[in-house]
Image (cartoon, rainbow, N blue to C red):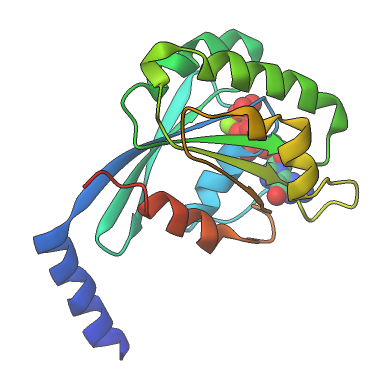
Length: 183
Ligand SMILES: Nc1nc2c(ncn2[C@@H]2O[C@H](COP(=O)(O)OP(=O)(O)OP(=O)(O)O)[C@@H](O)[C@H]2O)c(=O)[nH]1
Ligand SMILES: [Mg+2]
């Protein structure tokens, strides 16, 4: 399809079949949540990302679906906000720095204590091992193991290895999220 007809087609889809879905992005500080969202929204990757204070919101447009993405601060003082921002969303995205071994046990505990909250029952979960461009990263199988993802039974769970920097697997992330839009 030529660029012109593609734009008309996208516009018609948005006019008559538009869907907006809320997605919340959480994970420890420095995992790469803000970087991922910046790149998903069409921005440039940068090493000078500023730690998020509280939260930010950015919309990501993909065909007829608008992802309303809530990017939460990962420092300990902001983690008590996570539950409130996860309530009622179409999907929770939990981002892990897959090249930082020491962060993983803390990330696992934070994730599992959040998933025990009754208000969040059943919300689909996508766990992303970010920074796959770095040499010391762990792969998806190991991430599933160390994050105890096989023990999660009350919701749909998927796990991908990604790099916000090199834009690795970001299409798969968007496709997964769009597939969770509430009908
Ligand atoms: N090599 C590499 N570095 C990354 C990647 N994604 C993010 N970073 C870097 O990791 C650092 C932290 O990124 P942020 O996106 O600010 O992390 P965050 O999870 O939003 O952190 P908080 O807002 O404090 O919770 C920055 O220096 C980024 O440039 C990646 O895919 N590869
Ligand atoms: Mg941030």
